[in-house]
Image: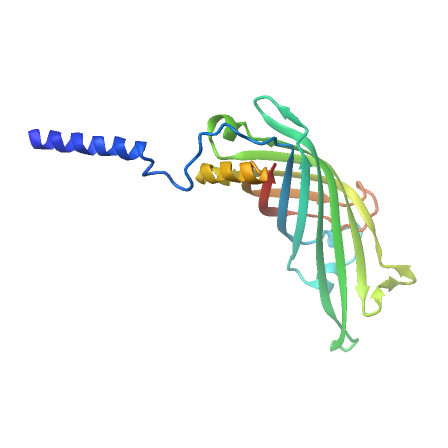
Length: 247
């Protein structure tokens, strides 16, 4: 019993010693500096599958988009910059966000007999939106719980252009390009990577001004239907993922 007690005491003492020596810390040791840079902006890098809602237009005969381009979504790439101009105490930040992106699709044209003609036709869409963005970061900043939910709501526009071998396509003398307006909304959650390495986060903050780096997942609705009117429906509803840098 005496030997067991001595062994337990030795293990406890070793744990306290190694704790003080930071032997069990993951990542870069956190500095004791109270420095933290100002946080005014958030920059998102975005990627998502994108399938435009062209075939959902009321009164449309058939599914012209699916017939022309197939049923597989294309890859959308985008950026969003938020101005976090007001911090709500105990909640998080709110401010305007501007998003821009690009998605394109193309197919080889076919002759009347069904053979490939060697020419291509395509559709390019440039979605833009302006939204109010609320980021709830009090769980992370006040309690250390590494989740930051957020929501967005605003308006959007999709610039689009149909193309063929000659450039911008024309249909019955009408130029195949335009703009479709509508609404934008999103909900998502971000996971701050600072949780895994606070020391590296402080170092990055001191050297670059980036005080939080996160990965995120969201679902968004880009309803570019002319606010319920007659418009070429180039919007979509889908998920997005990426990284966000707050600085």
